[in-house]
Length: 346
Image (cartoon, rainbow, N blue to C red; front, side, top):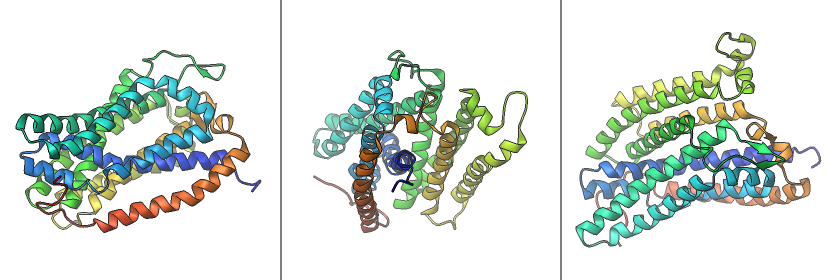
């Protein structure tokens, strides 16, 4: 056990939990935003029927990521939370509000009330997505830290860079949502989802490209890792990093071709969209490693004591397979296309 690098293991665990949250709740939030453009209540109900068995369980990964950060890296938690109080509170309020709207929209009798709850679900999804984008953007650009405490202002996270990341997050979640609808629906809704997927893929590609180039200017240590600067390219370093953007570009081209193909399987666009997110996520991880508070505190400096990490590790080793098995079981149980009339009817 002494050979285990427990801070490193826990950093990987939290990174996996966050990525799984993005993969699962991303399509959930994406479909929530798309309901604002549904042509009818019937189409909107078909959209929500594709996520009804999964939406509340998808947010388990957000709890695991946040809880894991608090338990395993208390110093990082103490720095990050004060810097993002406002966007985190707005995100949580939006998630709660859209959860209430998800249930109440089926109970509403009057048209005016139905319209209100439908709007609450759609715009709650949008606000939650934008909040996550602002948090991510603020995280990437770094923090003002003095004496191992956050020393910045309450709106340090709100910058042109974080706005760009937030808008890119909206495009990315729309891509996950549209590809999920391609997997789960048929007929006119599926065809309309393909059109939306093409638009959101263009937005995602543009957003990822702009964010990637902007990230290179955030800190000299990032540009040093990638071997790229405004004036020169260090090919000895860049060649090792090149597979990440190449994989991302390749997945985008593959997805683009699938969206125009009549023969591609319906399950593949969603997996390709997740792969695109994964390449961006890996690129971000490589850029900021080993910092858990960019670019101030490393994962080893922020970690709890080894005995606490080991106790947490044993608990995670037991619970994580159970959660993964349950997630896989639920998705297999409700596998297949959603038919008209499926879903919750109160």
